[in-house]
Length: 298
Image (tube, rainbow, N blue to C red):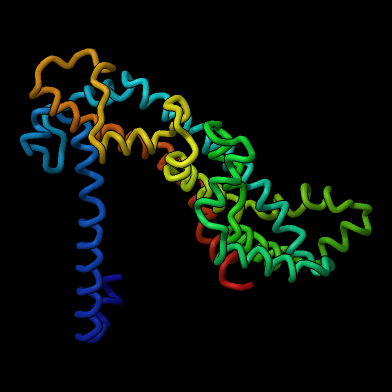
């Protein structure tokens, strides 16, 4: 790298230096808030509210995380979010694959017409009020399924999956399967799905993150506290500044209340981010390949 840099012209060297400086500045702008949140979540409450926390934890403590797990609303919201994310993502993947596969087959003569109908829904919808009326008529209000069934499939993700199947799975495999007596369902399960692991991994990340961060549907369809996801609880803590201190047994003074409130905010953010951070390394190796193959052509 150094040899290549030395062989560059002066203008190219200046350009490379400027690019690296900008990238380092961008890294600092992005990384510092994340580092600060993690450091603040492990710091003493009084150090947080007095502004002593800059980069590393001050007087490290786990009181913030203890407060998080003592708050029943946070624990319930966390468990609800896990349920909505896992069940919802599984349903999303099943619906997406079952829709994308027939639309990828050339012998399915109606595929272009159906694809146009699906694409139409990306640009035009009934609107918020008709959607609410539909969910209400289906009896999904104040049920966990209100967070799962109305968003069972994304047209955009289905198109990516369909394009991946068209460009990555040769038609000769289907013809060979037919000669061996392979039924369409068996071909889908035994051939198509194993070959679609990269795009399925990408879609799991897309759907999973969307489900985990979803809060607007919960605001519309869920009124019971026992069904609220973690995002709604976080909204109450971070934006509306609502903290149920009756759930926290070690709070005694007003000053400590304020400090623990701040600590609870940072700790909740870290706890809410952990599942996505844990999942991402497992799908990262498929991410670039799946997105590029599924989105470039089509």
